[in-house]
Length: 375
Image (cartoon, rainbow, N blue to C red):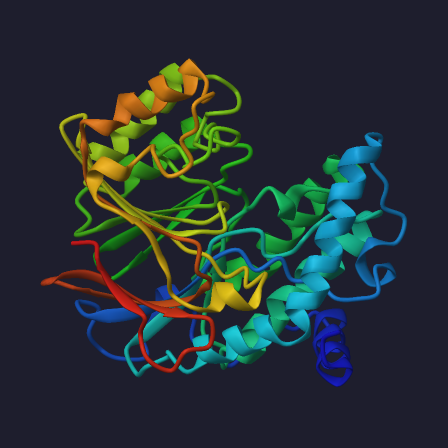
């Protein structure tokens, strides 16, 4: 179980309505360092913040599908076990990545496990998780994106209402402008950060955000789920507009990103990956970040696959459906780089005129496990 004194302190801050950002200049108003040309960003993947016993956040939760509820309750056990020691040490490692030029921390969604029984509990859950990370990161500006678990509850409608309240009260002061929607954007110097709700994408708003940020030095797309098919025959439709089958919009948004040479930062798959794709008249580089330290082994960096020819083949089986193979084939010719690992950790992204790099720290390791060159 998470240290009870720490849990009670975070809960008290949440109940008081504090973000710990009151004494910090909002992200849009200024920097911790005068130059916006070179800066760093701490990256965290899914966190699935939670604690034991279940009644703390999951009281009253139920699902009409018994097997699905059983699967979710297994996740509660997993979360409590990893948040007893491993995940706090991962967050402490992330806090030590903060430098004088660090502008913010980006968290890639699934901030919490979700699966609550009331809107009140869901909002408290989000606040507690957010305050925990804020306190751990020394009040560094913290921006999170909607993950499917952040919007999941006994009744998703109250989870969505709770999340809308949460981002308005927490993210607005962080960014320095009113945040009313789950798709929004902000600037760091001349770089655009476009935040997209993966579960409920507002296509018109996404197009508007791209239009409003035209001319940016770098365009970063912050989204929970990936843009390119995940390496699993079971879950390959975990892509933007993959589950709703809206191929026309999926291809349209892909082209929009490619023409801006977008760098996609995402999570969801509980893997750490780099994928570089050329097509649609441009380029998309996708960095998938994972902070779900679900087993001790996940805290060690172990490469599973590397090379463009390995894309689509990591989980390939003789009975892989033809529709899955077809989806991978749609992207295969454009893949130039591909790296896949199931390791969990935190990252420090460095952005400058010279390029964009991400140093990945597996688990709580003091030294960088590897460096990904995004640009």
